[in-house]
Amino acid sequence: MSFNEKLSQKVSEAEAVLTQYLPEETGYQKTVCEAINYSVTAGGKRLRPILMKECFLLFGGEGAVIEPFMAALEMIHNYSLVHDDLPAMDNDEYRRGRKTTWNVYGDGMAVLAGDGLLNLAFETAMKAFDMVTGLEEYKAVAGALRILGEKAGIYGMIGGQTADVEAEQDGAQLTEELLLFIHENKTAALIKAAMMIGAVLAGAGEEAVSAMEKAAYNIGIAFQIQDDILDVTSTTEVLGKPVGSDAKNNKLTYVSLNGLDASKAQVEKLSGEALQILASFEKQNEFLNELVTSLITRVC
Image (cartoon, rainbow, N blue to C red):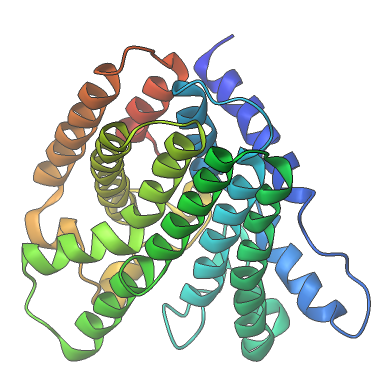
């Protein structure tokens, strides 16, 4: 089976896990549930839950305890996209080839859909407690919850988004320090959550979890730089969302600071370092290595 075939299979598996935790579209809250499901089922790479599962397998994890966290992380990622697309943020009308949530349901309902997804994420993750027995397993789930909260919060993704918004509004000087802070938190934080949680739930030790955090940092930064590159070089048809929006919004990006060639070189360097870390473990996960490598050459 080729890498693309394996990836397609794993995307389907991640979506099946996610779907079972989505809300029913009933009751007086029906509209917000519809908006939530519209947002989450719009497609996407499902990169974060796949990375989480593969890291879980890398350290010998077994069972379904990983699944609530896979769904929860994808919910958090999608809530951030719903809010990013709002007129008050990036003001994007299309994502993944179709209208954004606010463009279908209105600003207010999109805000509520994002809020609902964030809360639903933690409701979902806590269901992992029902799947474990024994003190060590309970500690692992609690540790995974802590990572999820920290990486999604003000010292993680939201912190990065804050710096990003202020940089645009205030016309802050384009410095690499600020740029990397934004990328590390806005993008890499959830990649860290994915890989660290996978390791923690599989019973990996502190040293291994720290190594996974470093690998995830590199992968997250590389992924975001590649995203910046594609905003310049790709098309709306290929990417499934508007291109050129970074320049239109005077957005701080690695490409605007360092240029295309240097940005491409940095993606390759960071990805290579991440692969070295993954190769340092006794057990290997060939698909995980291929997935990281694919981030260098992705075109959408």
